[in-house]
Length: 521
Image (cartoon, rainbow, N blue to C red):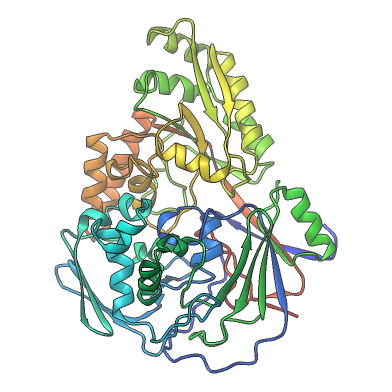
């Protein structure tokens, strides 16, 4: 690397990093002297939209949730829990079923070319945000009926029984059962708070879908324009309520799919920050034959040469994965081991399962680079070659990123490469969201609903006793290893180059790129 930029490293989703503790004061931000500078971020893909509730990737979270919007609570970037956000404080009932949030006063929604607010943020906005996801009869949901994958996959759609405004600045959530990681869940991008006044204006004009293209929030940057596959432009929010969080006048995303081109733009000064350069798991659709047979899944699993993939795809910046969650996660079962790499045995297992002539399948590969998979095309080709040795004829398929996720959620695949960046630092994020029955129509890409496993995960979610939760998660991981709904490949090391003039930047262990407190010398 030359002298134009420095590189900082973090092992995803590790916890060794510098934490940013955001200001929790609820005073409106005084008109600060924001430097007349432009920060250009070379991003790897176009967001599918700016309506946080309907997306589950870091591309949309970076472009909307952490740029335009805020949430009731925000993650501490050291992984130790949550900080106050739009809620300055909260109370939890002794039985763990009621959460009462005391909201900030004086927080303003953004003024844009397409919306001018007439009131400050209050409880009505919180109610609108969550009731839109909870109640299918809610008018805006009826006018713009989209899927809310995280809200459903996390069990919130079933577990939240009531949301009520006790007064203009107090909101209470009532749950049907204890949800140990509830506070972490509502710090996630899908829970970004929207303006009810803006939504009402869109509904009245018949333009409800515009909420996905023209966002309005209380966040640090104001959306200005978006040209798909080219640029997204933002201006600093002069009314932002967190002191010193906005330190550049303009923020521009240059959408650059090729990592080599992103790197070259960084070198030449066209951008000052970029998403990961080039230097992961395979889900089997268990709702389809022959992938409904655990013996077939075990044969596919043990015929993949993970060591070769990690060396070639991750180029040393990866760690072999054996579990459905990373070793930095509490309740990780270090005793679990992979079946040995044994193509001959795998071929015999396929024959014993009734497939002596092998099988044909489509193997989907992501079209974009992700932090958990720096080169999906190469990985797919290596797996294709491994499977060919046991008589499995894999045809590699890909789609545009948004289409890839949409089709995968619908279960159109046979097997696909996918991955996960931990969103809220709890085992439920991995075992529940990726493998739970509630998530079969969402982020459970294996379409695997196995009651003994699901019961353990739900029991763990419903208690705050860490020892009991750990025991249940350990048992769940052993069931996973027996059933092999997907093959864990690697835990990646994520690194993010930036120009030397960039100050205040910290890598977020939960996936998105954050611009809070980032400045240019």
